[in-house]
Image (cartoon, helix red, strand yellow):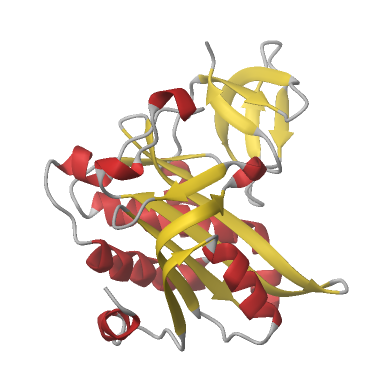
Length: 259
């Protein structure tokens, strides 16, 4: 695959510019630099191989050649979107889950933004911001999606069980057709960012809703409770054993089923 072929694949989408790399450290790093130097809204960075990608909480996300989707989309938020900037990450998760549902698979969103199939992680998403003083200039939405079995790390390296799309489908998948569909879904849902339909669809896809979960912070503090739902700002509602509710923002919080 080369850049001219990918440009042809995306020709029918309102993508003003793209940069393609056979191999790169991190698509988000390149997109952040490009955003700082004036990249237009909806410009995209795509890589076949990613050697030092990262997820939330500085976790590594490696993309072997030819095995996965690794791309970063640059947004120039409107004034209305600035107030909802925390929802760009679930926007990506919702777009991926809609795409997976279109393949007759059941996808769930592990708060705030991982996409699961059969309780296993298929896709990770990382949103990062570019600021000028106290003004939000851009949001970079990085998406990594496992397509072939080669993209799934060995079990001893995983903090959460993982899978890939071809394993779940039992058939070959065209990565670039998948990219086109995900971008279409992102562009379709973006005007509805934070709308009742957006929030309800996200909550309907929420993994572990009504189940006991454990939220853990980087310093090892764990909070157990029942996952109730999502707040309007994307925060999580957790019902504790005493019946009280705790509201959590995404930040560097890790979510897993209670053991």
